[in-house]
Length: 236
Image 1 (tube, helix red, strand yellow):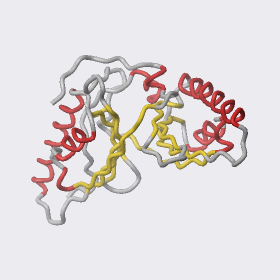
Image 2: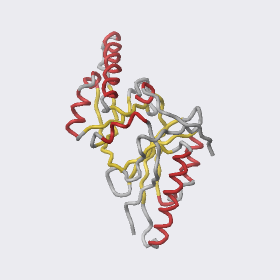
Image 3: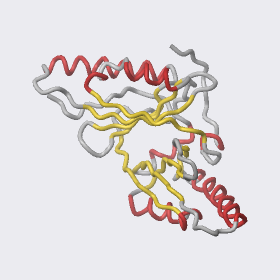
Image 4: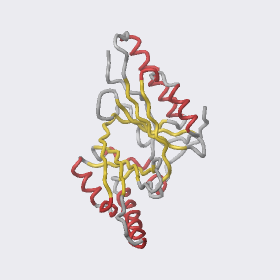
């Protein structure tokens, strides 16, 4: 029985991530900012402007790949970032160089390469003009005693379905997370209902727990600064 099966296929991706083949590791970084009480508004505006300018520099250097805003509570200031660096020490240098780091705490999750991660030279179709993005965490637990042939067949159907979803512009990226049977995917869908329907229809769905986080655009996202090459596609 294979405990390391993760959903996957061959997926297209943004052109701006050409850099990632030259930089050894990718990381998901949860950045939470706490502005000290009494800080003048002008000081906040100034550091945010410097942060935006430095983010553009990091994107041009290939260290900052994506930025998103997750769901936030009132008064919360939190950002999710996809970074690339040679190793953890170099990533820390990159994060420490960001102006907001003086008010920020960072939680770093290393992302291991998935064998079916897409060729960065392949353009990404859009899943509709108003597609929303989601980060989806999968935890796979194959039931004990499952027939090996059934596991292999389900894995093959999952790979084919992932390939199809990538061609429709729904599945953008896939990584392995720390821990057996865990993976992280970047997805697009028209809305949360369509995203849930897509995930529920995956061949491995009955063996997985799934956690989908809706993402809002961040003004300093490199995908906005450097728009992806796109191709027309339909949606299911």
